[in-house]
Image (cartoon, rainbow, N blue to C red; front, side, top):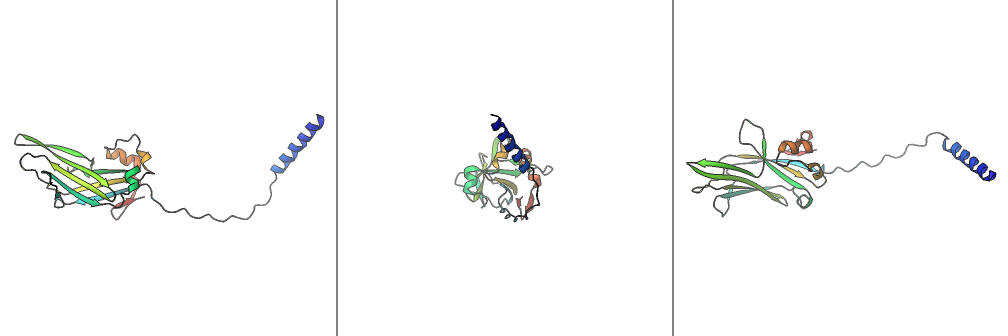
Length: 188
């Protein structure tokens, strides 16, 4: 048994002695390849729409316009998100309102609504306007400005628990203030 402890002690001493050895540094290794540039997971697009762009639908009181947005891919539709906001038409505020938007209007004692909706498909964003005026529904008489936030699947986790109708909350969660604009499209 003494022999076992002696052998064990010598083995430990050799291991400790060898592991604490220092020698000259070896040659410098090769630099690795740079990572690929890729998507940051979020894009914000600003869109302007003239009041003359509206196209009537067959349903009375309904108009639409389709924007081409190649950033909306099948991956975005299946696993990401598309959020759309309209700049408030109250000029004193620089606010964006989450769509859909319903506005109640009273005219000569008659109450009706104007509704602004959006939908999306691969490569497209549709804006729909519905005026429920009982006598003569009209398309909007003013230009509109939209902000579309496209979230790729790698980025949607940041929106868990965020009120998607509150642009400021979405902006804070996605750190939109840290994004720079290039040709109207914002990229990180």
